Image (tube, rainbow, N blue to C red; front, side):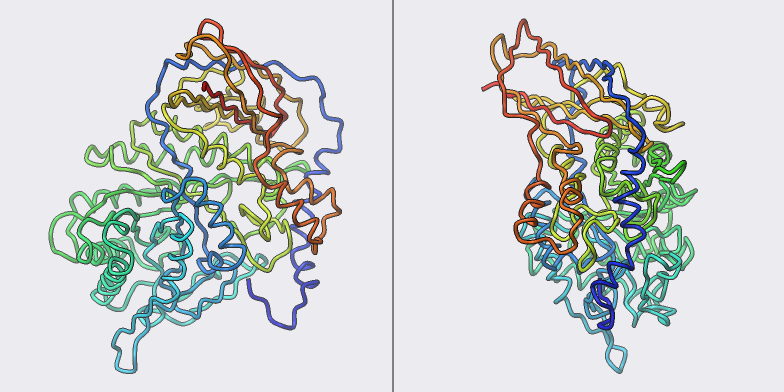
Length: 573
């Protein structure tokens, strides 16, 4: 984020102080009452012989509004960490890849200057900045999930005002400026996308670009698109035609609607792709290799604590899956939930967003991603992935209360959930938990009475992994769960296996707690910084231990605090 030179770092810190206080001290205030100390029993049963099909790595998609942060010091560092989770299989989606400007980042803003026009109105293409964004990812094992947008200034029907200067104190609608409007010339728009795709094929190679996703725009059912539904379909048709003219085998899709089905937008869009007239080709139908929508939770601040809205995110997903399933021609088309998050604005701040630095974000994420598999199975649709719309911001205070994965190069607890999921592969296994809140109950009412304690499990040859969470919507103290994990029908025979147990809680995989213990320094010493870096990594609960399989069964016990997540890895070697 760029600030005028007249604003000092001290003033910047003061600017964000309100939200920082909410995120740092709000959790402590909520924890002031005496928490119940007696653990309550929970039994989790996993049948190693009952496969539910392949455990698809839906977690491997990430994104942000601001593309230029990804090429800066801490952004490139984080891109490298994401790429290391599953090299060449992780994707990064970002707005503003065609926005006009010099590449200076700011909150909810970015630019590449890919398209301008000369005095005679002729196109001038410059891929320097967008190449740098893609190169930063590809060099670190992260592929582009290419968002085709936003509208270049020279092509916009309403170019003035164009560059916004949004801050968390401003109204959200102030971001919707000239970049959000339709093009003056759809043929020029289609040619821009053709030239961009052609350039990518020439620079990166056909096989590489075939592995990317190309999607058109962002949330065209709200202010991100200042045109009509029909104009969006025309925008989509010309963009997809441009991509396909340069690379007929490219993977194209959309529409990235907000709010799941986006009212009736998703249904109308699928009708257009299936049976509408293509504005670019004049033929019936438009290519749709994958389809996308957004799903968000809805946190609030009540009785002096954060209350999450997991049910809102589940209802978004459930509603969109139902629309997709109603189209036989698209029921098995890959779906990417283009943004899947606990709230709707990564760069916003406020007391209701105080969950972001804490393990509440971690446990929410574990419970949400695991249940996405169940929601897809309910509707019989093909869930390819879900984009976590959280990245990092430069030149802001440590733990400033943004929705991000790392702060000034220090990883937040939520990033370790993705490290956990990256260690899981193979067949998804059937799980039964005595404290499972139930998918339909969560969708209707959230997790407001008893906590949700359950697991996601997978087996890959001689390796079995179990992700266990202890989640509640309310960020208030609660008793730990005394978990008895029972595995049955293990195919390994009797004998010893190695158990490695990773944990995210207040004292494990948690740089935020360590930062507070250090006095919340905004200018940590090199030694403190190294300590925070280490604390942000995925941490074992204890040293690996040997456990015994007896008649195909294995049992182990552990306490799991509220809002904590465990990953247990059983290796038969």
